[in-house]
Image (cartoon, rainbow, N blue to C red; front, side, top):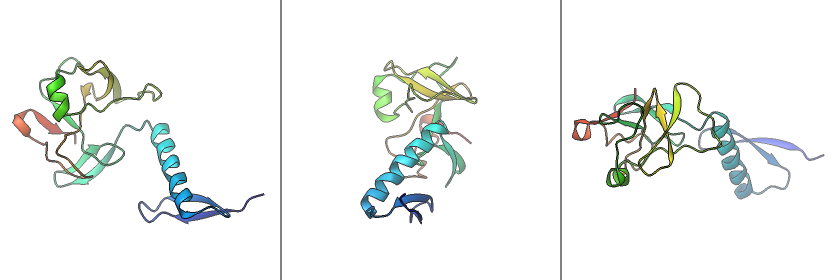
Length: 145
């Protein structure tokens, strides 16, 4: 039987199973697979994160999620050129929506996530976790608090 050793990841302090003889690189790969599985089990939908705008809803990776005032009736009104700047937060067919999350169609025909019935997007100018560059753009884009 292999010995199971728990190691703390420097980033996130998560427990990672490391088997005897496993290299650091393969342990990191294992951690990534575990995080991906955890994201899918939890819906991979989002989390509340601290930003300059206070606590806002973000992707599992920490990128800020936004709503668009011109969306209505659970439908996305962000067209193809809009989606280049405001990418839809696409939904995996494998992940089941759990309230307050639901799935709607983006204008590109793919399923995207909606929060409390409003389609959600990321912003192309947000480069790292916690960025909120899109908040208030055009008076139509807002972080989700």
